[in-house]
Length: 608
Image (cartoon, rainbow, N blue to C red; front, side, top):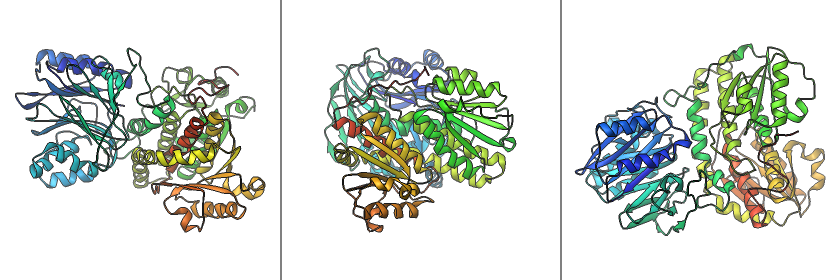
């Protein structure tokens, strides 16, 4: 979750950029920089480490330009050095970037063949060179940016500053948030309203796929099809608070939309983007080749992340995994030894049953590894190994971005285990890492289906009971879908392994029963299609979440199809989490439920 700020002002903007970036420190960062126009030319100041280092650099060599961009970077491609810090620039353009450009290697090779000389190890620098090359062809910054955006694969927020253009900033987003601020003394671009709060409380948010042209007298917005559109200016209530809802009705909606960014940040923490090798952020006191089994324990949604990961560990690392809800694990008197890795998953790191299970494991001599979202939590402090999820604060009670970040960490760990155990070649491990790196872009693509999913939710809002079906790694996602719907809408819902349908649940199927089938194109796809046909034969109201054409090819007529991007990957569950989350969210919203604080539930369960 890097930070972006841009200002078109009436006074030197460098100090203002640094002050705004300080408000984004909570996102985490390892370097920072600003760029302004000095007599029409791009000038930069960058520094490794904290913003005080950048401030010192500016004291030594001030910048006086009245237009500029700034950035706090969390390293993805390349180490946290001054050379890799943003903004990245040519003599024509400077760019700041949040997210991951998945196809940067192919773009970099293409640009080098055209004579581009790269100064950093980052994926972001390719954007500056793409725009520079395009400017030679069209000589128009707005057209140049418009033309290069379709070439970028992945999730991103971008801010552009152009040499010789004292009245122009351009921003663009796909899967990472971006906002335009309207002030009395200038115009602003920022990662969120919190960064812009010192300057203005009037903000317009870019929708998914939007790009914007900002000048001193206002801003124009274009959608993903390059059509000029209106984006509503709202008055924010951010003030001095840390987290706000942005332009979303609920924190849950905001957190669903933050997933491309936070998943990308988490991936970058565990995968060397230059080599594709999985790297753990800390030394581990064991080798997976010496581990005989994993005992995984968690509660609620976190336990379903663990259940999903079981498929990955067993398939990729050939490592047996037992999964228990923590409230049972702690009382089973499970035999443990030094050859057992106990793995615990929690958003808060304070969940009472999970913490008690961790302590039981430590008492019985097992190695403990925790996947948590709060690095200072009790579980983190008491574990032998801590693997953080970098989801940022999650306010909504129903977990969304923490869940997908948990999946991301566990997927990386399964690849790492496979390499150590010799069940994955280095080449295959890198292929899997690239599949994982593609996840933020796939999640961003899934978010584009939001309006369709909202339409489907109107059908669910009328139901009394709902079934979710999935096979393989989609079975835990079926459980998660049912859990989310129960939590938020209070509709009775159950998730089943699709192969178990004929062993009992099919008795529930009739013309009034919505049956949601999660069907990515994976190892189990054909069998899942067969299960859908069983439901259809009994009049069930099928809702398909799968690749486009799934229902047609299966000769089915569902009541709704959510046509997902054709995600052919071991880790499809990450992208397929999005429609599951949005279905529950919109169903509950349509029914008028309290989405962020469902009845009887708490964000962190700290008592038994």
